[in-house]
Amino acid sequence: MANSPQALINKQDEDLVRDFHHVWHPCTQMKDHAEVPPLLIDRAEGVYLYDREGNRYMDVIASWWVNLFGHNHPRINQAIKDQLDKMAHVMFAGVTHQPAIDLAEKLVTSSSPDLSKVFFSDNGSTAVEVALKMSLQYWLQTGKPQKTKFIYLKGGYHGETLGALSVCGLSLFREKFETVLPQNLEVEGPDCLRCPFGLKRESCNAECFVPMEQALEKDHESVAGVILEPLVQGAAGMNMYPPVYLKKLEEACKATDVHVIYDEVAVGFGRTGSLFVSQYHELNPTFVCLSKGITSGYLPLAATLTTDEIYQAFYDDYESFKLFIHSHSYSANPLACAAANATLDLLTEAGFMESLKPKIKAMHEQGKTLRDLPWCGEFRQTGMIAAVELVQDRETLAPFPVAQRVGYRIFLEGLKREVYLRPLGNVAYFIPPLVIEPGQIETMMNAAQDSIIAVLKGN
Ligand SMILES: Cc1ncc(COP(=O)(O)O)c(C=O)c1O
Image (cartoon, rainbow, N blue to C red; front, top):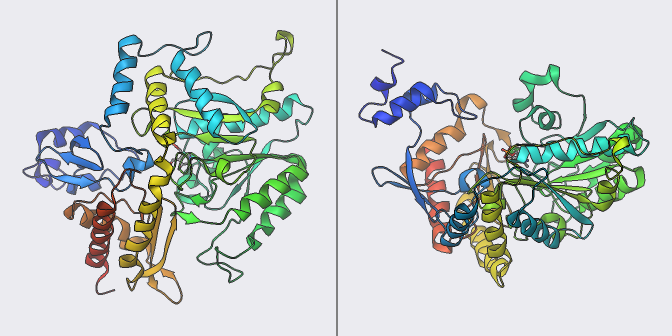
């Protein structure tokens, strides 16, 4: 019975056995669950998840980076309940509704000045698919049909549907599907920890922009757009780089007639300490992709924002058939839009962004516990996102081999300390709900430190 979850999960809930028999979890080697079952989470409150025995776990990665205001927030709950009493769902072609109208206006008001149109979909990958397809169709309809490729950064991540994968710069996600992916162009992106120029991200002038500049010069006639995650490449291990890279990108794309697509799926909605990276840094993208925090982790929703110039290329009489051919059954779901409206109201309330400053400071100060670890290659932070990259050797920055499963073992140690950490390889990171308190930040960092020591002592 070596493979029987019943034997291995011993004394666990029968429901976990049923889970093992029928449920296939995302991004998970299911065999792991024969030994260690998933947490059976029963309820959640504020920054904590609770299992049936009442054990609690601090959700320091905000349930895959979506939760902003904590679980079970009274105002978001109420907004959804109010909307539920009116209408749960209606299709979004030929129909509109108040929650979507309000949300579109809120998004446009709080984003970069040139973004005036909002196309709704239902997850981060679809927000990206929409931007890619809109860009392609724009060029097709404005006399440049040869612009069919996208430039993306090594280390970039934009979701796992095939279109989004075709602009993914992480081989882990794309290698099994390589043969069917559209051929786009990968360029070397910023790598500030191992900067080839020996510079620091705080003071450099994005000297690493050269490969992008060269790619744009060489290939701009066939390039529709450049897509990247502004300031933080999340899935790459919270790889952080300075805004000057984005300024250079916008200049170069303007000069070469190439769209700029910022994927703010992970960094939008306050994560970096400002509402949106593009708005705060006065950037002027052609498209911005949003999801994750948009409903504060309540319901699936996404939005792709773009300019009137793009919109106008699709606006025509019927004979030309220029409409944007793309739809999802749950586009702009009213319950999700109601949750998003409540989320944006909370985010834009007087003083909320200001209230993040002491927390950002606390994350920096408490990060000392991690900076002092003998395996700390770097502790990095952008606003409310922080990460520690663990290395075997601080001088050479040699990583721990994948086979050591450092991240997974830290995750297991974290659970013993009531903290739900889910490192990306050798990078333990923190994207807590924005409402986390300074005292909880201290607990989070201490628990991470203890978990890391438990795994790596003796290395
Ligand atoms: C930057 C970025 N873009 C897109 C996605 C895909 O979002 P989803 O998982 O909702 O499809 C993610 C998910 O982690 C992301 O981090």
